[in-house]
Length: 135
Image (cartoon, helix red, strand yellow):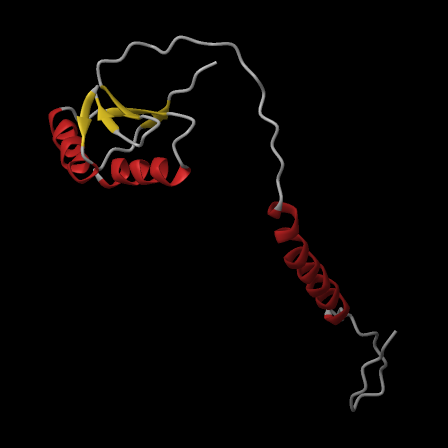
């Protein structure tokens, strides 16, 4: 217990708390959390559950974008060039502001082609994109 020393002869106990050890402990905990947080989210293995087939609800605001095994692109079952796809989607969106695109791609299509189609859909201003799969 510390005592104040001043000119008076009365000796009083110091009532101040030394917070330096508390700050040291908090800084150590902060460093530990900063170091361990990225390690927890780096490798996440997700085993997705299998579900039974469900029928999609009928919706009149849909456009179907298909990519066949050869990389050909079809928009609502009409062959489209990749260059004109964005303008076609933009025209569909102008006609229907609630437009949603259903993307179905053959399993032989490389991921890059699917990602390119997704980027074109996003660039056209369509925010609703669904993937069609088979059982």
